[in-house]
Image (tube, rainbow, N blue to C red; front, side, top):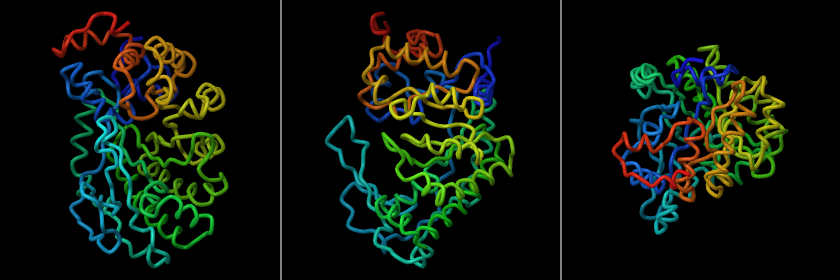
Length: 378
């Protein structure tokens, strides 16, 4: 088989055709500490460019509208900031160089109560046309380089809602069937429909939706509650994208165990499931059951193999996934979350070498980075 471009490789794999090799990426990227380690090891600055991953992400531009959230949130500590949705972000581990990127939240809608409150709350202008103006040139440039493009709009409905309301309070709203929850979900869904359609028109290869609705052992809510509140709204967002471009691939990100609703995912038009945490769901069983109807993006455990396995175990895990999940397409290999500080450099090297069958030491030499003895890559 002749060599494919990254875009051809991703398109083939995600459409259940066998690529020249399994495509790969680094999912949510490198944590700040790990990025600094990468720079020291390689002399490079961008892991995707250095390692030659197959996917690049795009997103909308920054908002020019500045909403006043002072009525909803105050008394934030030093170093905190408020994002365009009004959520407060509070640093929690500034004294820990490994986890300084972790943060706490302040919820601007926590103390609201009525449907009117939900209607009056200012939401960002994610549908504004100027926020998409830079994307045609960016997408075309990536496609000209042969790269696959994913348009990011994860934290689509549920997750951004609980960022505003607080998870416990929002789940109580859903349990009680409040108009507050209905109005909030509907307002966000309407904006996401516009965003999904606009993205589809711009011709990315994949649109990534997502809301974490799984926990380590089971779903965060009952399947019945998910089907009542989130399934029909998510279906509307997907339908908007498919109306704009019927062949666009839809990926859905949710951490955790979500087996009870995978058939629902397929029913409403999801093509790709991400990240498929092996600690929560068996990716090989999922391939056997759903492999003709669903592709998989992820599957390499960031709670087990990648941080705590040996390089040999990482290689074995990668090869097993290629052989048992990606043998006929259907796999975009990736860690199931960020590359966190606990991951040894040798395991990152083992991951890349196993999926590409090319030595990282050659990449480092080409980039003018430091050289290491062979046993580092053993």
